[in-house]
Amino acid sequence: GQQLNQSPQSMFIQEGEDVSMNCTSSSIFNTWLWYKQDPGEGPVLLIALYKAGELTSNGRLTAQFGITRKDSFLNISASIPSDVGIYFCAGPGGSQGNLIFGKGTKLSVKP
Amino acid sequence: SAVISQKPSRDICQRGTSLTIQCQVDSQVTMMFWYRQQPGQSLTLIATANQGSEATYESGFVIDKFPISRPNLTFSTLTVSNMSPEDSSIYLCSVLRDSREKLFFGSGTQLSVL
Image (cartoon, rainbow over all chains, first blue to last red; front, side, top):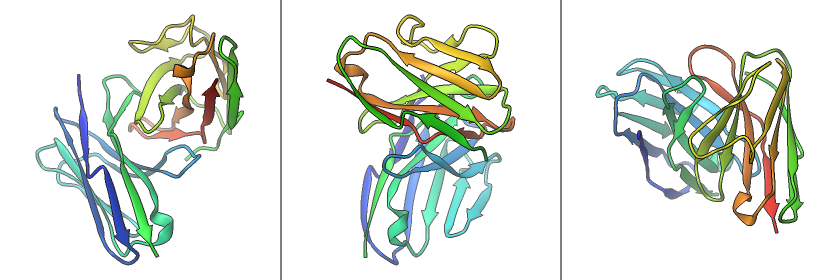
């Protein structure tokens, strides 16, 4: 079946640094979604991408839909302590509402 | 987005018992789903909760273990039946708010089975 490979698995950075993470798929996607999950909470949608090459921002977050349609990237600029959490990429799993999720990137920010 | 209320937020249960999780949405939605997130893992779809008919289960999940109700367009329940420690997970209700794959999630139910 479809798989999403997300990297890195975890990151430890200093406050103020920029962060990059990526997600690759074994097959072509028409949609890429990025979520953030805080401890004890459900995932929150950050950015949705619908077109190859699309670059979309949400505040300090920028995500890109790779031109091969098999990858996506999420960048966070000037990280702050509240950026701590697990970031998941996701794509359509074949039926409506069925999203396939990556294994997540756990971000830790040192003040 | 959507306001999705789930309860309980967490519970500790004994092996062999059942727990029913409730999900309430602030407005009518056509599509509601239940996901499971095992400890340290990603999210996996359990089933689509269909209003007025039986839920549609994904491979590996069965109705006897995870019965689902959807009496109207704003409410659903998921029951985890005859629990074992392997059922210890976060269970998440989610809704599709538009047709562009955007899923919104409740805050989840953290279940621990002893």
